[in-house]
Image (cartoon, rainbow, N blue to C red; front, top):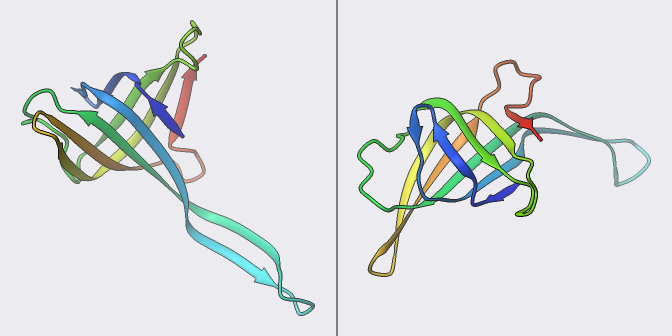
Length: 134
């Protein structure tokens, strides 16, 4: 899921200004595949464990002395509109743990920060990404 220009982005009590994009990727943390005795192709596949990785990309407009740090755990929340002319606003809430915070200088006066997080479920069978509103 790629969200460009989300609004009202916060991680716990921290307001994250200048967020250009939020990327939510899903991948298999564990996969199961089985073959039978009749051929070379899979007859069963499953993904019993999933990983939700979130990247928050933002332009830095000031020094970030209170930026999230690896190990910080809190709720990431933000809002988005499905399209520019749509009055509906969707909210997204993800309980997450920060894995890394990276910075990149682009040109003389532009810096970006990428915060990489893992989504954490409160109970293993509930998706950590919760959509509200709409």
